[in-house]
Image (cartoon, rainbow, N blue to C red; front, side):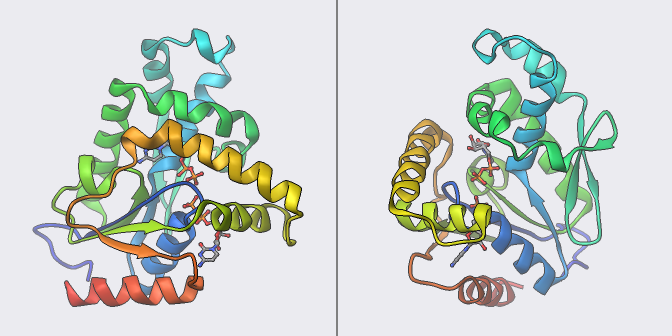
Length: 224
Ligand code: CDP
Ligand code: CDP
């Protein structure tokens, strides 16, 4: 599938936090022999870079965040891309609470969004990818071969996130707190989290991950 020289294949998978975008994209990419690019990872890496510069996030100017962004790149691996800051792998640093609680602020900055989108497009120009995020099928790849809008009820997304983080079933109190946190981020991210008009909607609330991967692979193969 990755041999079309004129337009490298792009599959976009967008949706709210913890709907399964990254893990599903990774599996779909492996099945289709493509690479997975996580656009949220780029926003996280920029946030990490800016956090290292000090100052409270409320005081960050867009210019200073853009300055941090210019130190960020992505490097192709066998099946995905790893985030780089000043050329060094920083995957381990970008998933912590400090980045998670600040990243949406950075993602609101229009020039930063334009910078990220240019990096994602440049990556897609030389690699066939499955890319996940919020606006990949709308702002970045309006002509993507396949666009998927992945969703699940907030409480199910919270349960998945907690299981992913702790490896065990959550308590009711943990579930309530995580659901509230996800709904807060949904609200904050809602402007840039929009399904494309021609996206295929996949409500995964009652699905297993294998089922949703199989469905997306089937759709991609139909559009070969
Ligand atoms: O995995 P999760 O959905 O929690 O977040 P992520 O994909 O790692 O993205 C982190 C944050 O980056 C999101 O909460 C959005 O604020 C922002 N983001 C965005 O605005 N646009 C994208 N295409 C991807 C992420
Ligand atoms: O990237 P995003 O934040 O949308 O979600 P993720 O980190 O890929 O997925 C959150 C967790 O939900 C992962 O541990 C997945 O394995 C799990 N999961 C899923 O994605 N789909 C299901 N049907 C069931 C669980």
